[in-house]
Length: 115
Image 1 (cartoon, rainbow, N blue to C red):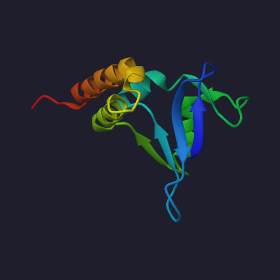
Image 2: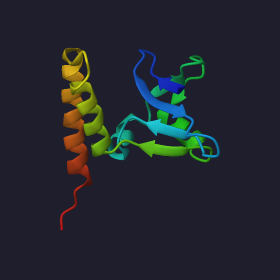
Image 3: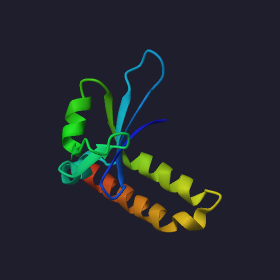
Image 4: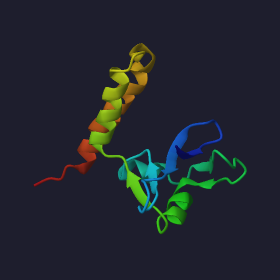
């Protein structure tokens, strides 16, 4: 359970959620740090207050002192894709799983450095 941050057309970009008693809440951004650069100026609002529209980058800056900000990694994306592929109704998620695998490959390329 938590609060999702969505675009006007309902695409979920981030989620604020509890990490248990005594821990700071988490603000999970559903992009890698490299992808975030392209998405930080997209308008979004919390699901419980759609009129509170601001950019994703502004939401991250607001929540950074209050929450643990987490970005997705390639392994996170592969785990999500695997969960979709192994889902009971996996035929519904073929395109999303393939997109998630492509994003994971790109995230791996982005994180690699020339030695």
